Image 1 (cartoon, protein in one colour):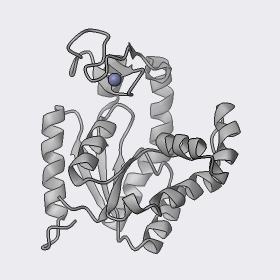
Image 2 (tube, helix red, strand yellow):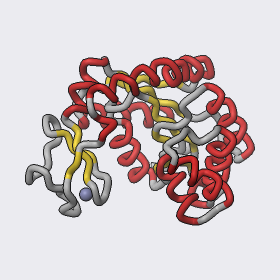
Image 3 (tube, rainbow, N blue to C red):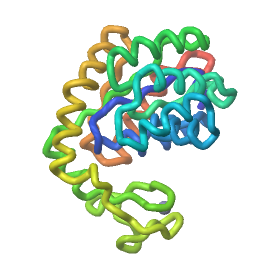
Image 4 (tube, helix red, strand yellow):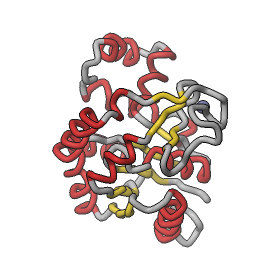
Length: 226
Ligand SMILES: [Zn+2]
């Protein structure tokens, strides 16, 4: 399936957007972009922005929008993004979305297709409490819904599964409050742009996968491109 479009997945932590973003990116053969990966990439390549961001990240502080948007612009200009990409967890604020719109326009992309993953708070907390992450490859498991074949061990690379500090209930509540305050208004921003689709993220991975497939198919033009 050809993409030729920017896809943006919005949703609270635990809504499964990371898993779906990886699947869609693989299916459409475009990069899956999260800000964390973009930062790590810029830091490891030693770019100017990477060098600016590194000490800020090491202090655990929020990287300023100037640097974030600069990294996004550099990343989207690379050839592997020419046929689209999937943004996972970015943008986080309306200010970032407005600047992203300008970057997309400059790169020759039209309106992004934005998918909001919806899930109620109780379900999010239940889900994140069961979430374990592979210390080696970053694969995510859920002991209730998608358990690994061997408890505590990654199916793919045998890595040890650990519970991330920010998946613990008290931290989850803070992350949700931040999502509601800063990121939730983005759904409204994109709805006004006419770019928003909504998915019920409480369904199984297979059901969500199927709903997402329908959205992509509907968004596809006559030439088979989105
Ligand atoms: Zn692994």
